[in-house]
Amino acid sequence: MTDAADSSSQDTFISHLIELRSRLMRAVVAVLAIFVVLFLYPGPSAIYDVLAQPMLSSLPQGTRMIATGVITPFMVPIKVTLLAAFVLALPYVLYQAWAFVAPGLYRHEQRLALPLIISSTLLFLLGMAFCYFVVFHTVFSFIANFAPESITPAPDIEAYVNFVLTLFIAFGVTFEVPIAVILLVKTGMVSVKKLREVRGYVIVGAFVLAAVVTPPDVLSQILLALPLCLLYEIGILAGRMIEKQKAEAAEAEATEEAREVSE
Image 1: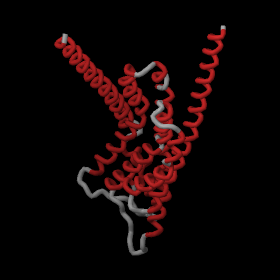
Image 2: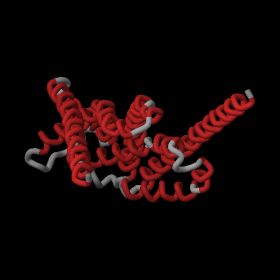
Image 3: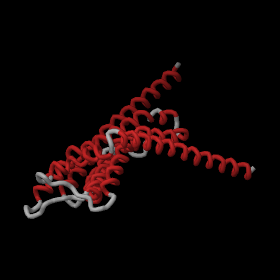
Image 4: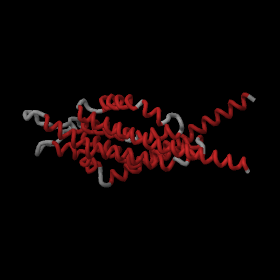
């Protein structure tokens, strides 16, 4: 009996590994397929030029960024194109992740799949858009105006791309805070009352996190910490609505049970 149970557990574990590998391969293939399309049109150079525009617009007239590495002018646009491919494939990648864990969830939890994938994707893209259109222009203009006139800025393109990728990821993940808060409330792991009680700790943690993941200038840290706090409050408001719906559903169920008993 024990040998049969061990064998069944091993078969289940192996089947999960096979399923995980299959889901990962599908996600990787989707990213690579989009990468090939972007490589052919509009091309890595055009995509990189769009990413570099916030920095170029803050540089003095006639100044350009430089490349200190031998293969940097080739590798950096490729890296940027790969990032763009991942962003475009993000809904499919999230779907593959959800499809892997969905069999172990209850039916009402599985119904969250589509709203979760759509909202997570939109919030991540919104975080990147906020970073590109607001944070980059603000921070780069501030740095350019702060620099002494005796200094001519000429940023290295590899350092620039690493910088913007870090901020993209930081702001994209930050904008997922409402989803995390809603899931915590939805699953009953945390109540809205508890979330309100730890609000002060969250605010302090937001500024500490911003100081860690952003450059050492105060402006970019504030631009990350403030949206994080605001999104946390939005998550609390959404969580309060969810708790209210739960209470109404429980009350309706209790009323229905009482009516059935009386009959």
